[in-house]
Image 1 (cartoon, rainbow, N blue to C red):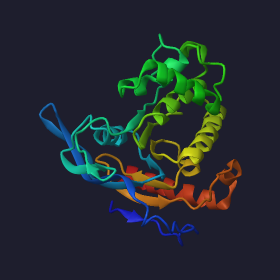
Image 2 (tube, helix red, strand yellow; image 1 turned 90 degrees about the vertical axis):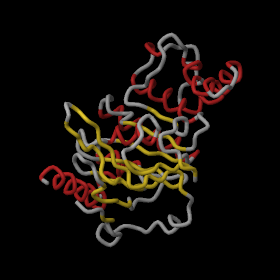
Image 3 (cartoon, rainbow, N blue to C red; image 1 turned 90 degrees about the horizontal axis):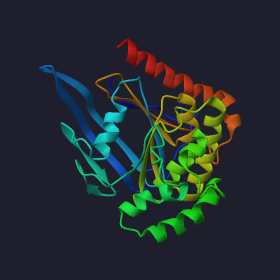
Length: 276
């Protein structure tokens, strides 16, 4: 399917007038990737191009197994693409690690470390002293609703609280780009909604550049400025959706006719991808 861009008039969208002048945090340009299995070549990604501007919240959504996590691994430098380039904050970093902050599907908290120690882990890796990381963690934990849990261990926290710790760890990292790989996928519906609202509140205050993988259309629309819809494997960008809603976002928008228009557009794209 050829890549297009959904027009504002099609979905009654408001134009993002500053988008062309805002500097880019991430540019993925013509990235393709394949691997060999049992003497057969399997194409996973095909000429993927996308952009995350500074302070922008962008989502990737596509069929299961379409290569979204593979793309994240390429962006993070864990894989080198068969073709194409990754540029972060103006520097070409294809195949290099250490340029993004990554939050996986599970919280990945170390069970033998307390909350404050887990929060400071990324900073320790970057060379910050344990004393300084603990001090910083204690300053931040009340801001994310975890006051009083400094000495708690991961098994003492709910799933949502563990994800807050993991996100704070990512937020305190020095990297501008935060990549979130389905961070709320394991939560129940109510906890997931609570975490989405919490994430938006924190993001609005700090406006880090975010790239999110999600299977939830509602989540992608609710959180994002822009959504890239991917086809089935080998994944291509089927369309780029500019989300029309003003910030700060409110839950009532999920029931609006405008929201349903955007959701139906994405559903159509995903259905078409699976039928192609």
